[in-house]
Each structure stands twice: as C-alpha cells, then as structure tokens.
Length: 154
Length: 154
Image 1: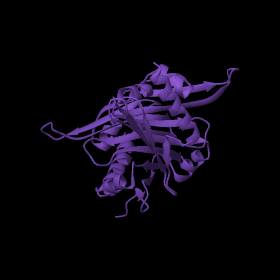
Image 2 (image 1 turned 135 degrees about the vertical axis):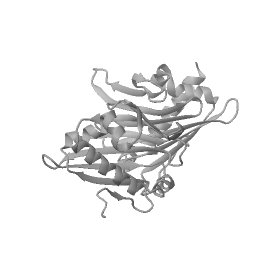
Image 3 (image 1 turned 60 degrees about the vertical axis):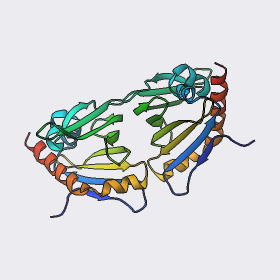
Image 4 (image 1 turned 120 degrees about the horizontal axis):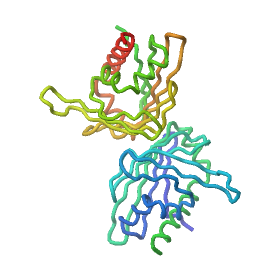
C-alpha cells in the first residue's frame, strides 16, 4: 500500500522534508498537533508538557506496561502561529540523533483538505542518517493515519 | 591584524562553525553569555529577557538615539549546562536569515584560558549565505574582543 506520508532526504544533506495531505480541515490538523489529549491518542505517548506557544516548551514520555521509560523527548517552541506554523526543537533522549529544529507548515487545501509540510534540520548529515536507519517513514505514516482517523471520529 | 575569532563555512553547507580562545577562565566566559548586564556591555544591545536555563527564552533589542528599534532578535534555550553547553534558537526579526539553531561549547584550557566553539545550523544553504554577506566575521571578532576586555576589568 502506498504511503501517504512522503519523506524526502537527499544524499549528503543535513535535512529532510516530510509532506502529507489529510482529509481534514486545516484547523483540526493544527489542533491535532497542539491539543495534549489528541496528541496522546495519535502519537501513543504521554504528554508531560505541551505549551504550544512562542517560547513555550514540551516533553513526551512513553513507558512499557511495567512502568519502565522506553522513550523520552523534549524541546522548545521558537514560534507558534495557529493554523499556519510551528517552529520547535526536538531531542530524543539517549539517542544518537542530536538536537533537531523542525519547521511545521499547515496549509488549507479546501474545507475538508489540508497539507502538513515538515522541514527538519539536523546537527550534521550523520545525525540525520542515523535517524533514517530507524523504521521512521513507516512509523510516521502509521501515526499520521491514526491522526486522521482519530480526528475524524471526534 | 589577525582576527582571533575564526569562522569556517564550507561551500554548499547549511552550517558554519566559529572558534575563539579567550584569556579568561571558562566560568567567566560562560558567565559573559548568561549574565544580562555583561551581555549588554559586550553585545551592545538591550537585554529584554535572558532566561539562561533549559526551556528558557531570550530577547534582545537595540534602538538608535531617537528610540527607533534597529535590531530585534529572540529565541529559546533548548538546553543550558553551566560552563559546558548552551543549545538555543536564534532569529533576527525582519531579516532574511531564517531561524538558526546554535550549539555553544565552553571548554577550559587552564586556569586563565578557555575556548568557545559555536556550531550554527541554518534553515538552508541560502539562508546561511545571506548571513555571510554581512560583515559578520568582523563584527563578531570585535564583540569577542570587547567581551574579553570587559570581563577582565570586572
């Protein structure tokens, strides 16, 4: 099955870009990125903090059924413009991917259609290439599928 | 006269690196980056906000003698480790340089000597190249000279 979330990573660059179109109005697509309860549902992580505003910060954590932390990530919001842009930093703790800066753009393609574009810039080419060794494209596509289903069902 | 602050920017990359050695102990070099009064002196800008801690934020502004704002910049601190590291975002308002992520490293080279390394990553190669058209290397070298003189005289 074709993946709806497309990832483009040119050889030798320290950046990648992600594009996905959703059957959702742009305000709901944006809301799915800033509302802690909705983020919890589609990302499957505990949202410890999500201050989605200029100079705010965020922290996510996932534990296994025994309560052991499996994943922890955090960062800061450089800027947030509702239904338009989010610029934030991202760091997965205890992982070899460094600190990334991510530029999210939200675009309306009609009443029930919208596009999300994410431009991620890494500390180096090798940090990016480490990240690309993960089943990253598959995981993100699945998460975006969940996002669409969950928001439609709200 | 040879510049003590060295800037390295390889062709076609969206990053640059800056290195400078100071005749200062590392704790004072670090302090000169987080203490609002000292920053004001060597950067010559008004410090509106400088929360030098993980998930803090900062804002600088410079006005001409008539009170017109000439320069305004802001960003967030992804992380701050005293005498060791600062990771922050940087954006100059109304300028074509985009949002940058900056990695500062502070290193002791002895009781009265230390090294500052800054790795700056840009949104794109062209954003970086726009920035390099400014008298950037000269300005930063002058600012670092002032930093050293001011901190020595405290």
